Amino acid sequence: MGLVLAKCTDRKFEVVKYYTPRSPVDVSWWEKTHDLKIMIHNWIEENTKEHRPFDLAIEEPFVPNFGRVGAYGLQNRFIGMLYTFMRYNFREDVGKIVLVNPRTVKLQLTGKGNATKDDMVRAATKFARLPRDRMPREAAADAIGVAYAAWENARQRIKGVQEFDL
Image 1: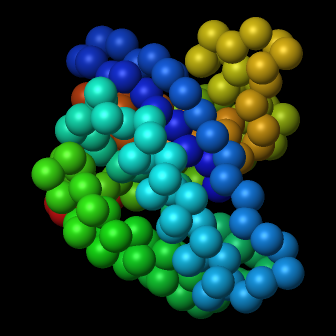
Image 2: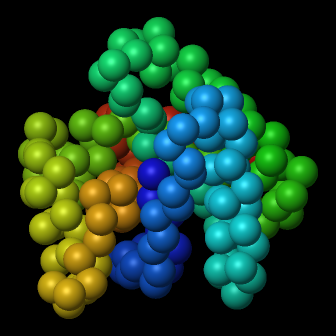
């Protein structure tokens, strides 16, 4: 999971900052989603004060070991927690929550819906105009792609993106 703060206008998308939260590996998914919620809250609180209101874009989880049912269960728990959390903590600041399909993220950032993680990192580095020594991790590259796909969707509706009002 990665978080990106991007400034967007009708014609320009600019990555301001990105972050990759890490939760402990040896905890349950229940605890992991709770830990991530707290890390996300802290990062949003510290980094968005001068960039409000903002939209929150999330990549739909793809968890191959769980299969579709497990992935949707995890997605629903995490997005439900995040939605409730954002509603009670940032209600006046969040415009909408945007949910983006992983293939749409890859297609928008690299031009290929089946891009590899390396393709995503290279495209995100180039797209965000980051020097090679500041190459993002895979999760941050995905987050840059999610933010970009959400921005493209706001400009012209694209397939694989859902929007929810807070």
